[in-house]
Image 1 (cartoon, rainbow, N blue to C red):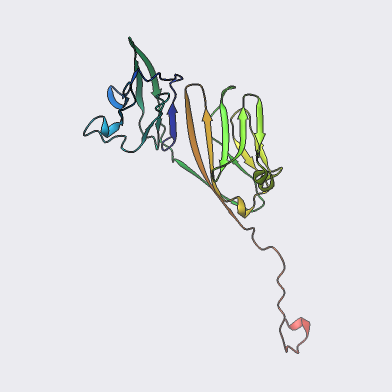
Image 2: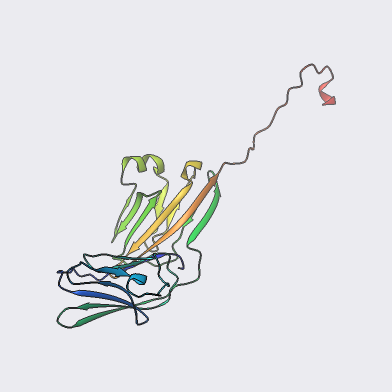
Length: 222
């Protein structure tokens, strides 16, 4: 989705002898030299190239490329230059959706944060709330609230869908308002989606009683 972050994984460990080049639609956008003394991204690699300004991150151990706030559909090509080139091709399709999903719900209600994906069996799915891990799916195994603080906050109120990775929070409280982030990581790539949840207090449904001091009339006159 437009505005997501995506990591294109190389699944290799560099031995500091290779040169790693990344291209987008045949334009070089990132590079690591063999001795790691020179690492460039986007405008550093090509003067006048503004498309990915401040949105690329390189892992100097693996050469994996992370693109933040993605807007760019197209062909991404990795070349690891050893004795011969070893190209790896990624075709990334970006759909026009808001990068931040907004949810507004009432206290006591439930909300489902749906990534809109069908996860593969080996994908790693992690959910965080305000940067604290709250849920995880690894293969067929799942963990909810892995630390003591999380267990107290969301105890018995989280449900994970193993097929889609979606997260349901029940009996919402105003303290559950905040930023929820989903990361789905596969063998070749990972994506991050963000959800902003606002929980507002329940409307007052009680009976309001007004006492009129000094009133001397009959109750029927009220």
